[in-house]
Amino acid sequence: MAAQRPPRSRARDLLSRVLFVALLLGCSLVFLAPFAWLVSASLKLRSEVFNLEWIPDPVQWVNYVKVWQAAPLLAWLKNSLLVGAIGAVAVTLSSSLVAFGFAYFRFRGRDLLFGLVLATMMLPQAVTMIPVYLIWNELGFINTLVPLWAGNLFGSAFYVFLLRQFYLTLPRDLFNAARIDGANYFQMWLRVALPLTRTAMIVVFVFEFKALWTDLMKP
Image (tube, rainbow, N blue to C red):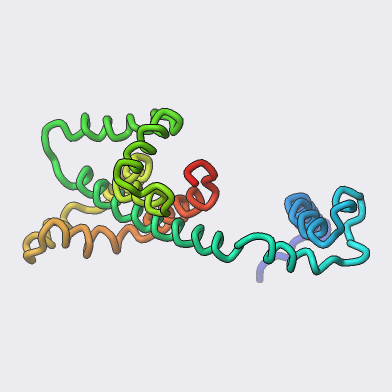
């Protein structure tokens, strides 16, 4: 029969658990306070936005009607979702394909070429902004959504590095077996590498979708 813990020890554990939960609740309230203030301010008159009252009196539900009438929010939301989804899918697949090449193939100068790819991360966006604009202008895609996602078709150095590290952890015997079964290099990437790195692909997709959603420079 297992020995029972003394009452003082159980009380100490209960107290520590209560304090831990209270700390979590306090931190949650701190992080939720700005969002609560945002909702409260959206239901106030403009002259009452910065007062100290959390509950609007009266509640101005008409503010939301005015916003939808004053701006094409549906069009903006559709464009953001479209650009974010297409751009995230494009950079995930293209970076994955490049990363697989650097992880699987062994050739002279591979590490040097991979280092050059990583070196592109040192270029700030301000340096390439004007040349990229001139390129899209020459191609005739200005004032369209294409420049906002088409660049992702060429991959991203950071995502190439991230996915390459995942591919290096895969046993090479899996790809050798696929080659024996008649798979070409593209099929090895599509049917062997991709299913085994779904988690990494999801991480890349989420990172890029968030980056495109909050990108206020390109538009």
